[in-house]
Amino acid sequence: MRKPLNWVIPLCFLLAYNGVETVSNQPYRTAFHFQPPKNWMNDPNGPMYYKGVYHLFYQYNPYSAIWGNITWAHSISYDLVDWVHLEHALSPTEPYETNGCWSGSATILLDEQPSILYTGANSKNQQFQNLALPKNRSDPLLKEWIKSPQNPLIAPVDDIDPSNFRDPTTAWLGQDRLWRVIVGGEIGGSGMAILYRSEDFVNWTRSKSPLHSSNETGMWECPDFYPVSINGSNGLDTSVHDGLIKHVLKASFNDTDHYVLGSYIPGTDTYSVENNFLSNGSDMRYDYGKFYASKSFYDSGKKRRILWGWIKESDSEGDDTTKGWSGLQSIPRTILLGESGRQLVQWPIKELEKLRTKQVSFNDVDLKSGSVFEVPGITAAQADIEISFRLSGLKEAEEMNSSWNDPQLLCKENNKALGKGAIGPFGLLVLASKDLTEQTAVYFRVFRNQYDKYVVLMCSDQSRSSQREGLEKATYGAFVDMDPLRETISLRSLIDHSIIESFGGNGKACITARVYPKIAINQEAHLYAFNNGSMDVRISRLSGWSMKRAQVVPIQKRRKSSIG
Ligand code: DQQ
Image: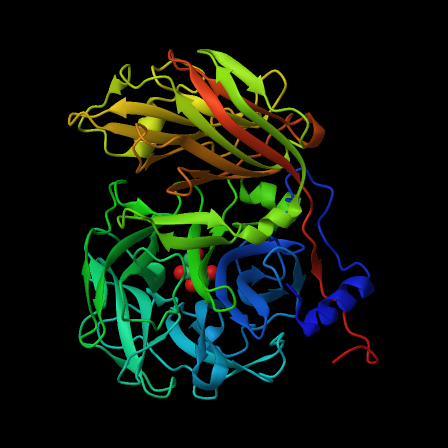
């Protein structure tokens, strides 16, 4: 595919780049995940595709590695892999945002006009929704943003709790030519998506009822609402409302991103859900590990919906101050409704494969009970690995108690990556030291439930991930909605020094982990496949790649004579 003509602009910047201050040479800095040069980063904001350029804004503290002074930093890319950091897009300058320009979303309005709706928090942390437009929309890099003189557009009035009213979504357009947007809130102890309508994107009227709410949860941060195609392989623009579709509502609470599926009736703005948000650990999540405040956008260039999520640290604020940075963005993932229609599936964007370099492949390797197999020849601290397992039989599967409905608890209580089960644990030992004293086990176990159906459990166990003290070393778990009688159990893990993003069952269950090994860093890191079940399993296919470093650089401070 030919690169757009404006590709030359950032390349010039790259070539002219003369070294803006960046944290480097640290074992936990990543090679192909998005990170600012230094300091604090949290939520992804306003991702969009505009005139051939991908934009990512994000919550950023320009002064320290701890949350505060929240500003919208801005980076651009042509492939979602290599990035150029631009000047900040929004900084807190107005009374309605003294305490920060908080999260929000981009909407491409009629006549291809890009816009941003975001939350401002004033000095009392009261929250208001605001609009910003690019100064020059013919510039594909959208470098400068102007706040609307009519801000704040939406104030927390009536029963709205002013300190729990934030994070407007991408807006969608109804057939009545009215824009709709939802804002996250909590009223009377229920988390909710408060709905507004507008003709001109400036004057907004609150709908009598929220789009959806739940008294099982607290405040919904960073809601997202969008259509997905039933049986289709393309993503859909947020304003699509007809055809064979369902609507996804995502809400961020309890440090994880939960979603429900349902059917949205645009005329009445009613949303009837197939399942609901729950706080007991058994509802559906984008990712069962570290992944929060995510946001999706429709990529009209490649007709796909892409999801970004903030991956927090698992070390302490003191560690972050010493490192000089905190927070990563996940690898952007395409997100679609799975074949079953019951859940979403996610997969790393195809473009990431351009970083794959040296490859190793194996077929049909037996993993006898109790065995470990080292994956040789790739950079185990910076790798992309895909592995599939064939089971020798399922008759021996251990019985599953009907009360076991929280997969995380199940992984934690069955924390036996090095102990024995029947079918499993089998999987990968990632960022492992040679003597295996450090390792993050990403693995599966298969059980049989009371209906004689097989249940596949996926776990990611950080308890042995580092010999360092004072880290959060959680064990995460997810059920993989698949039938191991008919499908092979597969795992893809993106390993990038201090982050392991794992996709089980072709993206049906995702678990992201942050780890800080003391020994298993750079060349000292190893990668193994293992089987600690009493039943043998076979690796039917394994492909692993060393990964190159993505180019993520700050823009050069422009000289008068340079472009633009
Ligand atoms: N982060 C933002 C808020 C949002 C929270 C502030 C979620 O707008 O609710 O940095 O991480």
